[in-house]
Length: 85
Image (tube, rainbow, N blue to C red; front, side, top):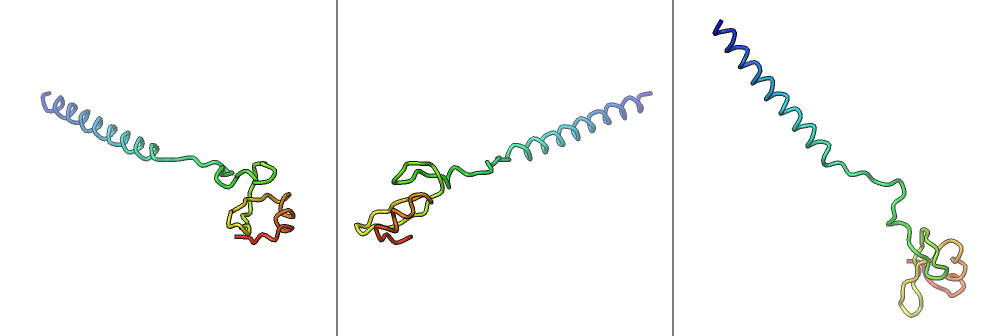
C-alpha cells in the first residue's frame, strides 16, 4: 500500500512539473510576436505642395532643399526643373 501511495505522489509531482514547463514554453513563444499593419505609415507622408498624405517622390531644388511630391504635383516639380533623388 505504501508503494502505491509513493508512486502516485511521485507521478502527480512529475505530471505537474511537465505541465508547468509546457505552459511556460507556450507563454514565451507567444509573448514576442509583433503584428504589422498591411500598409505602413512610414511610406505615407505629406506632399510639400498640396499637403495630402500619400507616397512621395523626393526632388532636390536648385537651392539644395528636398521637396516631397505626390503623383498629382509631380508636373509642378518637373516644371521647376527639379532633379529626382
